[in-house]
Amino acid sequence: MILIVTIEIIGAYFVRQLEEQNVQQFEDSVVIPAYRLNQVSESLNDNDSKTKENISNVIQDYTRNNNDITDVQIVDRNGIIVSTKDVDKESIGTKTLKDQVKKSISTDKKITQIYYDKATGSSYESISPVSSPDNSTVVGAIYVRASMESVYSGINNIIVIFLTASLVAGLLGAVIAIFIARAITRPIDEMKQQAVRMAEGDYSGQVRVYSPDELGQLAMAVNDLSVKVEEATENSESERRRLDSVLTQMSDGVIATNRLGNITVINEMAQEFLDKEEGEADGKPLVEILGVEDRISFDQLLENPEPMIIETSDISDNDDDDDNSLILNADFSLIQRNSGFISGMVCVLHDVTEQQKIDSERRQFVSNVSHELRTPLTSISSYIDALNNGAWENKELAPQFLKVTAEETDRMIRMIQDLLNLSRMDQGRSKLDKELVNFNEFFSYILDRFDMMLKKEKADAKEDDKKVVKNYRIKRIFTNKDLWVELDTDKMTQVMDNIINNAIKYSPDGGVITCRLLETNKHIIISISDQGLGIPRKDIKKVFDRFYRVDKARSRKQGGTGLGLSISKEIVEQHKGRIWVNSAEGKGSTFYISLPFDPNETGGEWDEI
Ligand code: ADP
Image 1 (cartoon, rainbow, N blue to C red):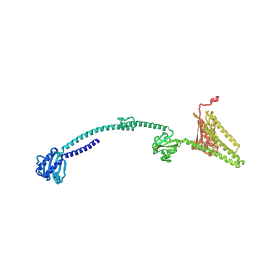
Image 2 (cartoon, rainbow, N blue to C red):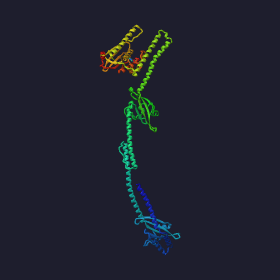
Image 3 (cartoon, protein in one colour):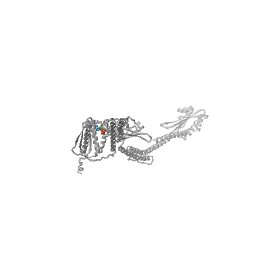
Image 4 (cartoon, protein in one colour):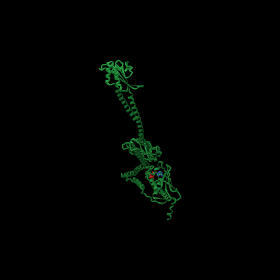
């Protein structure tokens, strides 16, 4: 199109120029020479008999060599035709009918015009006024008409040649353009299709390289890019899989967010910690999922990503599962690009429940020990002060004061002994010295001792009126079968003593203490029930904790340290047994101990030996 338009513009300009030049040449060729004009001027001026002949000669000479001139008329100043080119010369002597001639004579101006007539074709007409020799007046005019057919037929020929040439050039140009366009668009089209395939994740295809030119180089670059993108995709895919498996295997919870603080990645452990179903936390705000939205906003976290402790009981709506609640340490770090732009945040959750529990137990223990020691020490110190201040001279008070200090000192020694035992067991330094024991006999022996003790106390009380003895009865319900158990008798005696002592301590006067011994397939079960105060439901789980006492004042008054049951528990567990308690407040408590036992063990071999 561009080619055709260019050719046409050039052609139009060229034809126009050619036409103007040809018309100019034609005008020059038909113009009457100056010397002949002078002759005509003189003749018209003289106006004698020779005039017509002279003028006729001039016309003959003038038109002889120029076939294009079809008509010449010479008119005098009155508009009378003096001479013509025509042979019949009928019009000579008549007044010219051409208004243009009259106009030229009157105005003394040359008039030229080109016109087209169907019969004669293009014609040229020129009317030149003729001045007198002295140039004072117009003496007439010369009218010339010439055919321009030769000029226009030449120009037309050139136009035809030009149109043919431009048509051929246009066609040729179009063919070449189509060919070149196809040569360019085909590889571009193939590259476009390859780019679409790459976008869909298919990197298998290759673009054909047609030539080593720029398009060929582009095709090679596309092929190269396809390989590189495939490699990069594979790398990032395997990187993602590795990250996924790392996140899945991690014992810590990991959460990643986007710039707005909404969760984009959360691993299984974090979901477990926060009690969320798969996909439940996706897209939710991090601060909401961690339950810290009241404490801190995500923007504040971005500004100050300090670690924080989160308790899952605060997040969960369910109050019943407090036992399963966790204490988590949340560490935050920003995901930052090289440019410094923060594109998100990573939160790592670490379960510190156990650690926190141990810490709090340790603190509680230290506070308990200090408290337990301070009470007897304060009382000892105050009695010693009183003695120092003169009470030692008082024969009644002094022995009483000394007795209390001695009792308090004993209690402290007992407590420290208990603590040392516990610490030894904690460190695994306390080894069991096991032997095979007939448990029925062992249990009977212990209970007999209590019966004896009560008897002795009652006998002592008879002698000493002041002494008050708490009465109780021990009832035994034992299996008939001998139960042979391997145990450390000293330590197990300590356990039994402690539980029976407690039963006596917390029983009312005259209470019955029922001791049972029975066996299951693999265990012996000892139970010691009393008819005492019982233990409130809320305290049942805690009575085996160190220093835990339901009624501190009462226990202390009775010489308790609050360590007896915890030591018993440790010893029973050392024997791979279990200790627990059932109690109804106000009705009494039953302590149970189960110990592993082999029913086939009879102890017979030892008897035989
Ligand atoms: P203590 O030296 O205070 O007796 P223990 O560890 O032996 O310490 O017992 C812990 C607590 O358990 C006691 O203070 C008491 O409140 C409670 N307890 C233990 N045995 C009984 C029982 N038979 N009846 C009621 N409460 C008991």
